[in-house]
Length: 200
Length: 405
Image 1 (cartoon, rainbow over the protein chains, first blue to last red):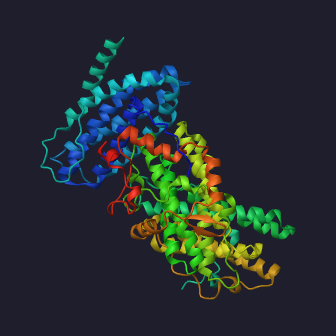
Image 2: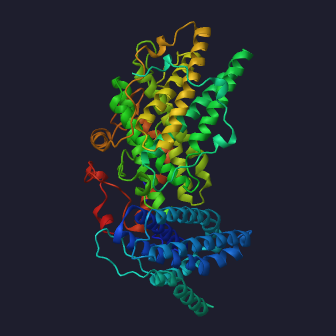
Image 3: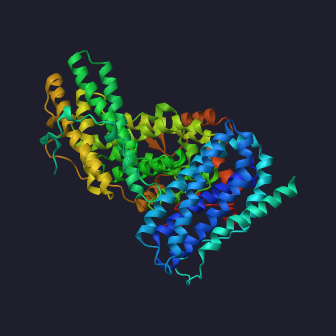
């Protein structure tokens, strides 16, 4: 056997990018949950998804994209494309919220699933492009300290848009109004701008 | 049973595809049956092996007429590879594909081991599968660290994720990787097909890791790919030396084509996605014609009939992707501490093994151990999927203090 060195590994605090990656994973899970469930469980999962997506995209727009724009080569081009994708996704999301609000849940039918499938593909593709073209390069250029500081802002945003730990299949019917879930974006944006002002 | 030698397939002159036909819709990585992804990965490896083997043959063939025939079929097979591999979606990360590769290696090798009639060859698969099983566990921990996602998303709960033979112990002197070969004249045709299949799969794994590894920016990811790609190098030696080196080029070509028919036929039976199943069926029809040409070359250059190579009974029982949890747990419990010496297997850490270990590890923890250490430090636990109870080997259970965080 090899004599093993006793070098221990330092625990690493998650930085802003780690937290955003965790949100990507959670978004993927919630899309699957909405597609694979029915009735109240589906509504609950969808409400969580809308809230999470709204918060997540806003946090990226306010916290990460501005730095990437400044720090990355061709930052403007990279970020403008991401913002275009986010705008398209928001349009689709608003359409889905309208569908879901229609007639006491009866709007969440097969055409809803088809449209949700389109949104899912757009969002997952967008997320992967961020991971490849933005996050990875940012880790190298923005510096660990900066990204760790920004983790606080991402956490603050997440606190404003709580989601259930797991979309439950058995929980009682939630009294859901989807409009306010989308409004999460505004609350998050206001809070993050305040955080930024405090830090300047 | 279906006998590929009795079918003509799609005429060769009609097998070239245009861009529209080559442009296949990828699978949905979130909703796909994980074993559909495994079938894609396995068949990609089979096609890559076929293409590369024919490229080698062309370099050793001095008939222009035959070189043209080989070049044509090789081009067609290259198109088949592009179709099969392009079923994988761009939104999957290389690490997610890696998890698919390891799941493929584990459940394909386990199936082959269970169905291998020759005890020596069976031992070779049983030995090898415990190593790929451990790689899956290491990569799953890397995946959660780097991409913040869980391997269950890729492998579902079809394959357990926990330690096998610890990766550190996979580094052996290359001399000890060389196995005895089967006898081409007496061995069961199933053994020939199994060996070609697992060789092709492992070779593809090696090629993939040694090329994709440097694309990662995280040092631990780069190092883990480098380490495991070198083990795959050893696995290729392990499996390629099972083949009888006295098989002629033409005989090997027949075996390759016959094996491609076998796997497309097998996976066509099992495929749950009708769109993918149609591709397996189309490719089977193409392979039947490739086999015909290979048989012609065998008759012309070796003066032998294909039945002398693959028999007259048709294809063996279809290969299946299915969970092998109990079988793998049994192997872990009984063979986890094996290593290799010469052409056999031993439990002792013999001199050549110890020397090689000292040389390659240089007194430090290798990347495969550091990835687990770093994961524990960051998450307060390891990433495992143990659906059938605690790990069968007590020493390989997750330390209680880690589990408690």
